[in-house]
Image (cartoon, rainbow, N blue to C red; front, side):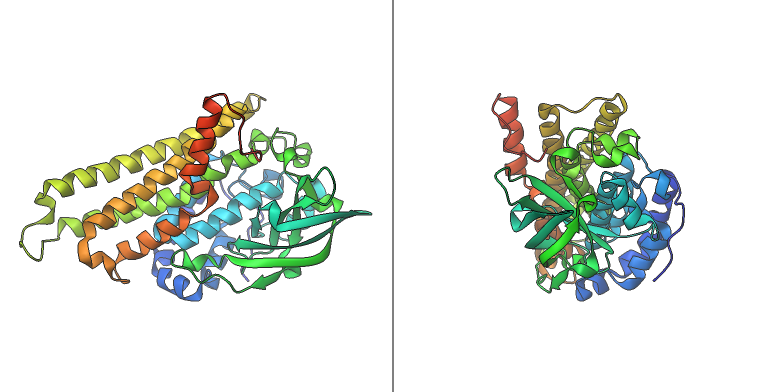
Length: 394
């Protein structure tokens, strides 16, 4: 295993590193699909470059960058390979979340391994936590543990077995997990998003925090990490994470598609495809969709950071808008890929055509809750209409 740097670079330096790795990651995209996980070479490159550490606290050698740094790095890597970008997104956001856990957790995770990869599944209904002296007994089985093969630590959520039924999050080493080989899917095949389970596993109190503690800028980790980054409402930011993957993937797909389309002629007519008005308007729509998606993502990151820097907390309407706008950015990115697929004709049906994989990866990404416009858009609409939010996590 490659060694991580003690201290990583700035946001700009990490973006430059991501750009430098893109060619090799793109070259391994087919291998990544076949393995159904990230290749060891990719994991080692991430570890050496420290790309997952863009939001890690500076006290542990991380960049502690503006949240927009996540958008930069993830979209760059996702442009080379959607599965690879997706896994890096998970490593980055869960790594960031460790900075909100108690200081003891942070030191256990990063003390001897500052470049640790952290994955996670935050579906509390999949687990139960029984309170015991000094901690909890955790049992459950969770799906969609993206990047668990290769990860060092994992964050799992579960409901407390009590009348309060509080939603809790637990940090545990991955070698305590049972990994179930379930990830056989139509898209994002290389993410290795297998099921994981534990049975009556003891988790100490200092490896635990509540979901509520992540909402209001007073997470346990803020005693050590006092910067505004760690006062963000974590769950309100989740759609930015997945949509950064969707945007980067769609944007690179668009550039590749443009190049192919400029040289393409219709098999029946022999005419250049670029001369068709239908091609022109669809290309314009795809481009505008991607432009809008990018603006929305950075606007969400900028607003959240500005509010946290002012020592304030986003109200529920702003949090709902954050989830809605960021989800819409992913929806616009997916729309761009769908438009390209519609223009590809019969050639796009073949597995070896780039738009085929792009379409499959996009459809798979849209199944994620943070990319589901019906869920997030309707909740935003509810809040705007004066109804209570249905998303209690934010």
